[in-house]
Length: 83
Image (cartoon, rainbow, N blue to C red; front, side, top):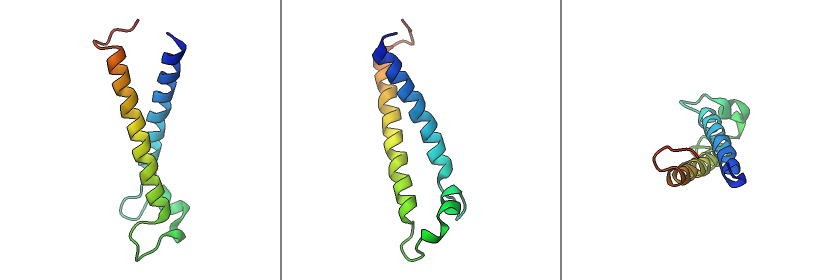
């Protein structure tokens, strides 16, 4: 494997782990890690709070990186061949 391929594989792995963690941090029905960490920062009139909006942005960015790297790997290894 070349150095670039190793770096892309590590980045893909880390983005996948980060994506799972960020999805689990989202609150559902008023509970969740983000609610537990900053429950007082939510405004009842504004809908979602600032932390939840930032968490949404991070999740979308991480998902875009994950999918982009997946497409790169699909182009590098078209039939699943490694080598």
